[in-house]
Image (cartoon, rainbow, N blue to C red; front, side, top):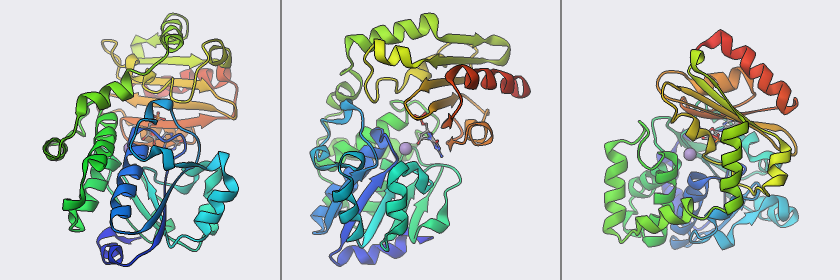
Length: 332
Ligand code: 5GP
Ligand code: MN
């Protein structure tokens, strides 16, 4: 993978590009892809955002989201667009299999792949150009730097500012995680100067839930949570029956794992959700316990030191038991 700076000269020649991110894109994945979309279209390029899967309803207010193609719902059209692209920008993921069923389509394409990402241990040989920096708060921070460093900060308009703020906010836990550096606050100050309306973004992301979702959460805290004070760990296992009973939609369980860390003394939190194809784990930690290593070692996953994910093909009961047994070896 060559440094991203070597790609800057190509921004001046018209091209066709696809921008994609990880499956079930979150605020940072959607924010960074749309910000880059608004930037590249201003430069006159022909750009399409393709999401590997659907996404949470609470992202549907974002500027440009109406033009995003859901690969799983539009396979033929997506393949056609990927096959005519000169470049594929891969944002907010470190390894191509995070694009799920879109992976083989990207693999077989002759387009040059460009990585912009902040996850641990990126698969750099898969990309022609790129930047990977685990110290970055978010991919949105990296897109801001990409625009500024390529000499185009004058093109940051309100749409780009809105998209960038969304990822900066969601990936820093509303500016509370250690990744929230002075640079993050300086970027936000610049976006505010451009007219950014930050309160509306918080409301759009965090205050659009259903009544059923809150009831689901109440039930989960009462009946699905186990706390292991001796291991400074709390976990939650969500069976499929809960997903149906409370009519959960994509994104409805996002952020739930963070509440477990609000218990005094808890440094390691995990949640497993019984999805259609697999049991999906989310891991969070405070301090030195590295959940990226934990997820990689035991649950076919990865991510960041304090936030990672993984999966299991076992039943939700079995994988929860596995987790509890493993915990004894770690004592976070
Ligand atoms: P979440 O728990 O919110 O799904 O994910 C937490 C972080 O870990 C995110 O940055 C996400 O992109 C990453 N992540 C989640 N699942 C996986 C996985 O299976 N593999 C890898 N490499 N990263 C993951
Ligand atoms: Mn991110």
